[in-house]
Length: 415
Image (cartoon, rainbow, N blue to C red; front, side, top):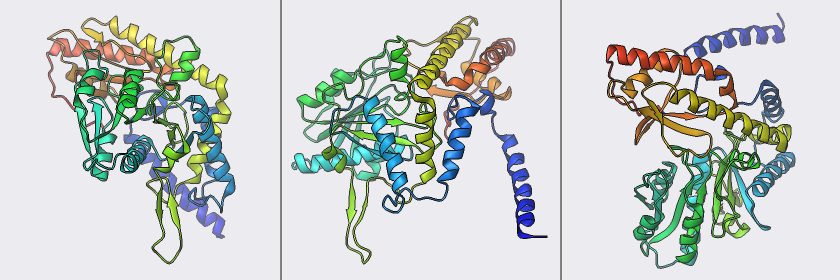
């Protein structure tokens, strides 16, 4: 047997093993997972897979060794800067995901504060309680403090309360566009104005909705100002692997000026190799993620993203209408984009038990702790599963009511 046949036989056995293991996963490709996966169609999947494969072995750290990756990366960043209305002179960093994009922005804010606020000894971030946990992870790594301010009744950041939380050690304020927990936009104009008044760094976390909001706006949906068009916004994070429909491992950390971006840079020269410089937390980075993101942007283009946004928003509206047609269920208002939450209005229908029933029926159900509710992040793949979801949801509610089933809240979503 030649080496090719041996290799083919080995891979056939390995592939069979992988396919067997995946049988225990929730069926995201048929719309049964309400978060994590974002898909438009098979054509785009083929494009990004093949683009990833072409750059499977390249390391995006080596921009001089692989100038084509550097070019692709720059084009993706330029797309983001233009989409988010960054003025001339803006700059960006391609990262592995929203957590890294946020950590890098926090690191940049700390470096900026060291240069511009030398009296600050214990740098502090003021954030709404709805801000992503990545800000606290960043603060933990960077020896900073996060003060989380209670949200308003409409789930948005309480700007006046955040103002009251400022101290001489505050260097950064943050807001979400929209928040992951409730799907609403914070008052970015108010937060940016606050930042300008007190000479603070203002970061907008648009990781979830950044690549959806501008295209929903083109369809006529009311999207509040949230990007660099708002004076005072210093940096913005947006995930390409969410509504940009790029492969996993693709996000942008964007900055109003090159100088702000340089605050994120790490340089080291005290070793025999010479100067080592990175803008990301990781050194080696997969070239395939860059190529896949580039392919997604080129494949879809403006028209493709508008069409995807239309599918998302119409699917959201169909789900909301269907959920509210089921007695005992209520969708919480407001919701601004592709994410919404819903709960129970009937003491005999425990929403935690409904979640359990839905999981037993093969649906991976997200949850929100405040208020306790089912969380749904809509993407185009869910258009095919609306009727099945609503049918199983109604059956779950009926079962919970009939059996008076109760369950404890399961908030261990990410384990």
